[in-house]
Length: 215
Image 1 (tube, rainbow, N blue to C red):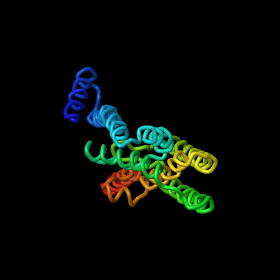
Image 2: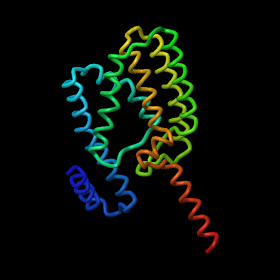
Image 3: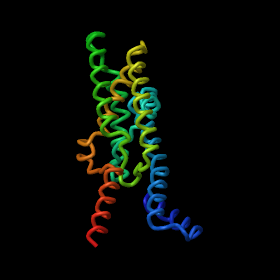
C-alpha cells in the first residue's frame, strides 16, 4: 500500500516535471518511500518500546546512535515489513540489552569498548560510507566527508561509553556502536542481499568502458 501511494506521488511529480528521466524518477521514488516509510516505522518503534516498558531507553538508543548511522550508512532491507522488524530489533534490542546487561567489572568493560573501537576503525576504513544501489554515494568529496565524520562520531561515542556514569546510557553507546558497525560489513550486506552502491557503479563504469573498447 505504501509503495503504491509513493508511486502515485511520483507519477504526479512526473506530470508536473516532464523533463524528469526514468533514472531520476527511480531515485525520487526511493526517497519518497524512505520518507513516508520511515514515519510509521519510527512510530511503531516507540509504541513497541512503550509496550515493552523501555520507552526512554528506546528513545535514547534511537537518538544517540542516529548520528553514527547517518554517516556510516548500512544495509536496507527490501520490504517495509523486514525494515520495520530490523529497526525494532536494532533499537529495542539495544535498549533491552543495555538495561539488563552489566559488565562484571570496569576492566572488562573498557577492554570490550576498546575492542569495539578497533573493530569499528577497521570497518569504517574498509566500508564507510556503506551505501546501497538505490542511493549510491558517488562523489569522492561526499564519501571522504562521511568517512571523516564516521571516525569523529566513533571517537565521541567511545568517550561517552567510558565516561558516562549511567550504566544504561553507557551500554547503549557501546552496543549501539557495535551493532551499527556490523551493519556496514560485507557479511551483513551478503546476508541481506544488498550491494554497495559505489562498488556497483564502478563495476558498471568498467563494463561500459570494456564494451566501448571492444566496439
